[in-house]
Image (cartoon, rainbow, N blue to C red; front, side, top):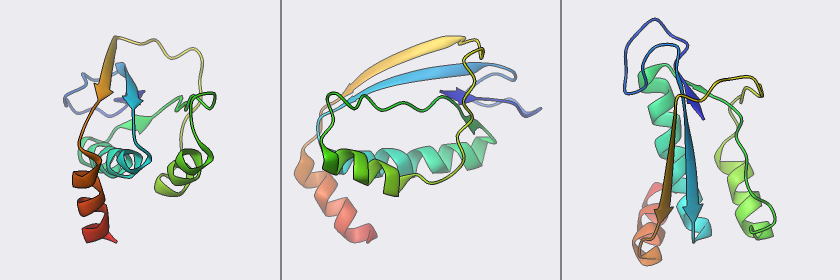
Length: 105
């Protein structure tokens, strides 16, 4: 969930929290998602809240990569009201992600 606690308008209106549900097929995609997330948080002065990874469906490699990819603070608060929920299913050619990942490391 991304929350706009700043006094500036952005994609997410001031005072609102939007929840994203991502269905990811490949461990490599998590790296790119977290890189994009870090940029969005910094550019729009947003707060990451209630980050959750479904461990029942995740491999150990996926969870390890997720933990290494995002080490910034996360706010956990079950009382944050969600103004909008967005659900997406990421289906991309993993070879493209491997190429980008190799270029960044």
